Length: 434
Image (cartoon, rainbow, N blue to C red; front, side, top):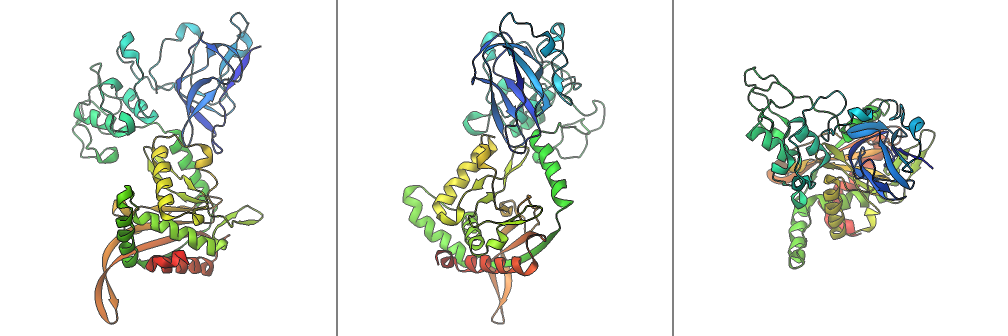
């Protein structure tokens, strides 16, 4: 019996997916539960499995194309089964990059969506057909610039080709491997003094570049609008004397040195935040529309910058974990988040979030609340700052912290009490243990 291959909801917030690559070709035998394709969701690259046995008779969405959740993107059936009625007109309303009729099914370059017109690269010889490890964004950018991924040096984990590798190659020789101009810009225009993504100088003769939105970037854009429009934000700021936390970190790292472990100031901040939330559960709450859900377990979301956006992996029961364990979990989750290998349960279910931009030299900032959470903490850098103490001006390592609050959940005094506790813990780290 024929089985339709649907674009499945592979993450809790996924509304559409981009097909990174098919792992089965038309005519290949398929078993129920076997991996059919890789799908880029709003958070990660996930595996789509077959829901039936037979042969992959029809591919209805090309690599690089997008389709809404529920759309039919392929058909599995018996070798001689009639699938004419199932294959005609499928692909789902709003699908881009849907496969054409049989006579038009010449291989498309990965990452080319309907209407983009990206030129195909040179034909591959059998020995060149081995798949190169690369992120979905790097593949798309390489296709747009007509760059051969096999010619690039991967600087990501395990030699994976990432966005910066493609951008470096474009700057070093922006012409495509087929000899034509790269996608975007004007061939005859004067060099522009603009700066491209990631601080890379704009290539000579290119005025601008239009980049397709990844599923993650689309979701970020939608969620920010959903957050800023209906959520009544207000902001509370405090300055924290980090003298004792800086000293405590040095002592702890000296103890951990023989085991090859190290903890960061951010680990102290996360631990203190979790402890403060446990003491003030009214700030560890969600807005549910007709109720406020107060959480007594602290599942801390930690904002991590990834190649084309942001993801917030979750340290569960952070209030019960020590500094070393929090440090290990954050490093592991951040690495897998950057590689888009997080499982849905690892980036959902946070009760409160922390975003730290101090390592980028940011003094202070405000963060946007991630609904239904009632608050988020924005952490700036630790800086030597002149302060008045006992009538004398002294220099101390100070840090500015800003809490964004949903006024439907957290009142001013409520948030202030939480920040008082957090400040006290960071100014005397021993309080974390009490």
